[in-house]
Image 1: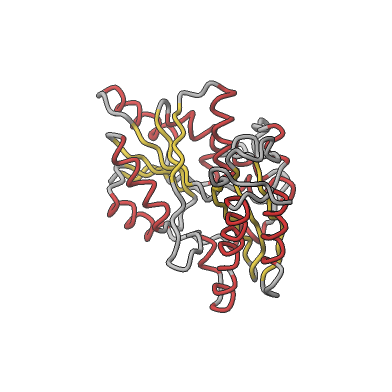
Image 2: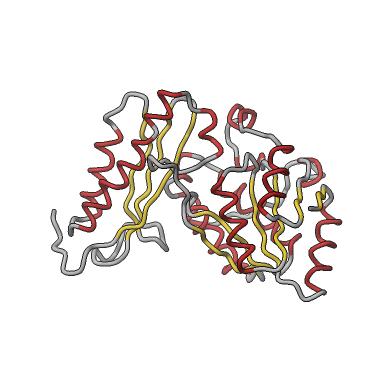
Length: 289
């Protein structure tokens, strides 16, 4: 496995693979790798000839310096995990390498999607995401890029970014990987104490409760109420939002009979956690208000 820290060398490497006829699969990460990340590598291995991973904790998407400082970093362990999963090359640049002139004067603003849900609570977050993703896509060139559905709003933002800017990238969404108790795998889970780890299971329980409402013919509004009520039952969980939205626009569903994406966010101890679940009404379901 090759480890590269320079932008020019990374671009040259992936260009050489494409010239040799290889289809490149890109797996962008911020490190602290877990089984969820490795499932993206597995998907890329199945569909691509070369798997290229990026490991970069992007300061532009952190509004809180303390949160940025606390984000887990262990490059040596990440490289061992990546090599074991079959990654062919890793790009792990420094902040100075990615932003050699300091914070960029040009940023990518992903429009109204950036102001919803996470965007309301984390102003500037998706501008940071969109800017670094655009840079990574520019460096990688034509490829397939693999993102986990756990960060569902991010996936929607990136897909819209690629469409609007005509980037030569196929964005592939991959299923959420969960622990046995339902908690979605996240690098941030490492910061949870035992009691907080137990309380964090409430996010998935809330999503499941919302799914039952939708698939029993209930309205999105009722699903939101059910999720919010459940999230409020544990003092260690400080809910931010519980939403039932259209999976493409992230707005309230225009058709109660169509697919719905349920999303929740909460602070558990020192950690902000997000999760989501697809839901749809059962055939013949009756709307319950």
